Image 1 (cartoon, helix red, strand yellow):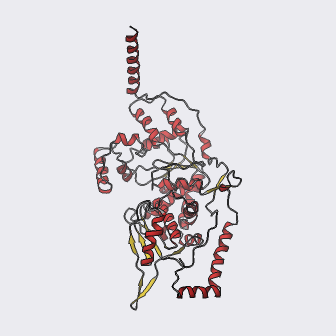
Image 2: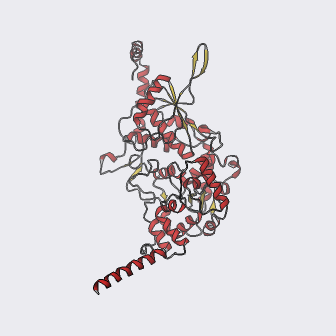
Length: 503
């Protein structure tokens, strides 16, 4: 009898658990403390850290003579291009190469021919990196058989995430052989995690100091921010609910049959063939949040319908029916066309200039929230820039943890919905200093390499002297003075005559 009762009890427990699972209750509800959303308008606690990408050790100026010229073609969107430019500067430094002003692949996606000079301040870029590398606007002309023509470059397709050694061996050998090399495509062509803190800091100097948008972009962005902030705090959201991302992620089931055909066709034409199951993709966090899901997250966190929100996004897929629920919850929505002088962007709203304006407004906003922050994404670089810009608040939804909550709600099981959302969302750093853990990108989080402390426990974290730039300038001037010294010039001539390369 005892054995039978035990079996019956076990069966009852199994059936009960099965019933709870069937109705969507997969775990007990854990109520969380309601956090005051108003506190999120302030920057995160820096914990005594401040941004600094200046060298911490001896950093010699680039040698007068380089090993040749380095050309790169940076493909992808604005932020993918920014990280590629940073990598190109590092490559030029370790190869002792003269960097030709990076080329931006502006035609294949953007249909925008403005290029680097149309988006970035070229003079500032060259001046800001004068302690690091030599930069020229274009390859020089050479004379051959009585004719003058532009130097040719040897084209190479670099391996993805190549180590530093690839550049200092294979690429450098080709550069010395041909005088100039052309690396294309140049996206993710240098490993992000390199055991060289000074080179990582060089990346930050490029990304956060040298790459400055042109004055008219800064001016337009500032006008938009001033208008938004004239009525108080504002939040920016990068809404990655666009055709290319949805097709890439394989998240098509929520659309009409006609829209699904468009997404499937786009995927076949642009991405590798792979069987993707929507429910599985969503459960592992691979689907961008819908506009409605973004609204539900913000409302659960305590933001009310007076919150001003700037939307940075391309053309949203699926029409206004996806934006309507979001707009109902948060009616104060703006973008660069509604809040800014739209005629200035009308011709280039889809191009790099429009993306640059969105970037600047998101950088300067009080709170930034990406709906999809995968590698190369608009948000990837921006999250790192906001961290460097003073630990400005970011809200990063954990899509994998949120997916079962939203799916339960869609199936009619919304018990403790907002509590469960808060439990996920308030388990976040909100932009404070934190250790970088794979797969988090260096461009998303450059702490601690590009940060320092005035009163550190570890001497390695000590901030460099305030006069570090004067020191670098002195080193550069000494190098130039040595070049002008008659005795050094004589020695160099002798070395040249004897066949010494100086390498």
